[in-house]
Length: 255
Image (cartoon, rainbow, N blue to C red):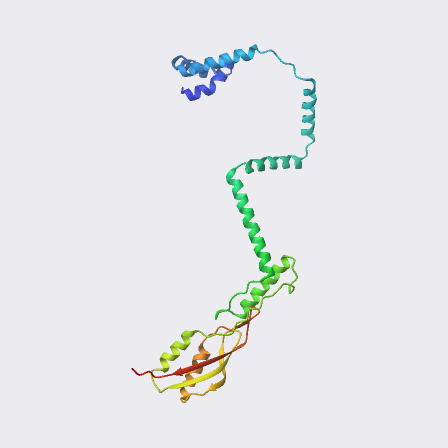
């Protein structure tokens, strides 16, 4: 037998509560191992000293305390036992350092999200509208905002709304492509138009402010404008119709 196993079974060996085969094995090991034999002698001496102690009579009130505790245990309901078990388990969790840091981090993150939602409901975040933004997407955002305010108990329409106006714009790439095509032929020319851009980003010429000398140039510019997708005007976070003034000049540069 190994020393580790023998040391665990020495108390049982001294109390004579072991099987005969195990006791013989421990006895043979003690005859061969001086370290385990020294520990065995220490336990024997400790048992002798404990046996020499004078018996101490228990106090009179100990019996009443034991009876009171037994009566309280019997009267405890399943709710109280469940609560006690929960408190005991939670006390063990709180004493773990890693769990303590985790709960602190989780509480901080929850508090941040809560105050962020309140701040967003008081001062709504307005999304920028590009050529891919649609009225359906805007309506979906407004519906989400109203549900959020309703869940937080804030009446819809009482919060401060931030006005963020924006004029319609067209991507410069359309201008660049049109200018490259127009500069390949023809003479110097220029034009200016006033266009209307609806909430979906579609644009069309409303008035011609300056007619070009070449009518074909105006037709090509109108074709480019109707095929382009513009960024609509924004008012109070919504896409609305707006006006856009566009000018184009073709100038020949000689080296």
